Amino acid sequence: MTKSVSLLSDDDIAVLKESSLLVGRTLAEVAKKIAPGVTTGELDRMAEEFIRDNGAIPGFKGLYGCPSTLLISVNEQVVHGLPGDRELREGDVASVDCGVLMNGLYGDSAFTFAIGEVTDDVKQLLRVTRECLERGIAAAVEGNRTGDIGYAVQEHAERNRYGVVRELVGHGLGRKLHEAPEVPNYGKRGQGTKLRSGMVLAIEPMINMGTKEVKQLSDGWTIVSRDGKPSAHFEHNVAVRPGKAEVLSTFQYIEDVLNERGYYVATPASGQVPTQE
Ligand code: MG
Ligand code: MG
Image 1 (cartoon, helix red, strand yellow):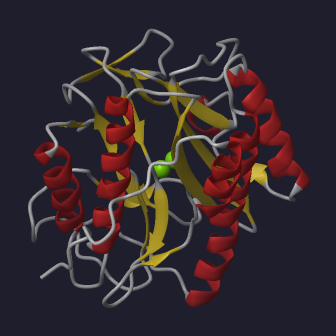
Image 2 (tube, protein in one colour):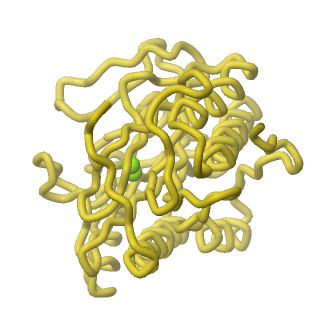
């Protein structure tokens, strides 16, 4: 565990926050358009144009050979779904992951959308996954370790009898999209990399309604749940601080649009975020 973890200055964190907020605004554009009959490719083209119009560049496109601006993962797809001709349908859930690079620093955030009416089971999955993210963020304070974040996420997911994906993890964020440390969504308290003020983390629970087991499709990208049950994914960027993490990304723009459209918004149950001892 000697991989060096970069700490960002407050000035750099302010710049990175602008990237994170642009991701939030891009996902709000997606929120305006996402509906039954819309293809994932249309959403991707719109997002790329929006990001470039705002003076940034897509953060994923071209990285590791990624062909797209968004990664859109529908239903049993967990993450890394490639946009294309697929039409979204009433009752689908689609996690939309987006990165941007602006002024040398990356933002990287994801939101899972319910398309039209979805089942109560799916609503609960979305709500619990949001709560997992909130709990992970609450653990991202100076002096804790990455294992405290993973523990908080895993404990809440498994108490709801959901599967926590092991193969994909959160990460440090900065001048590169993926930096040390890894931020698993499972773990043991007091283990892993020690968190220091100025570390910026992408915390991103990937929670399956059924088994935790996943497999990759033959496109070399898409990760799906092995049992075909739905999966959800929410991601925020946070700066580690003493006492309380500073959340740099936002879902507010997305939620404003969804509320106006009457689309389901997964709201974490209030008062359930435990304080870390
Ligand atoms: Mg992401
Ligand atoms: Mg990420």
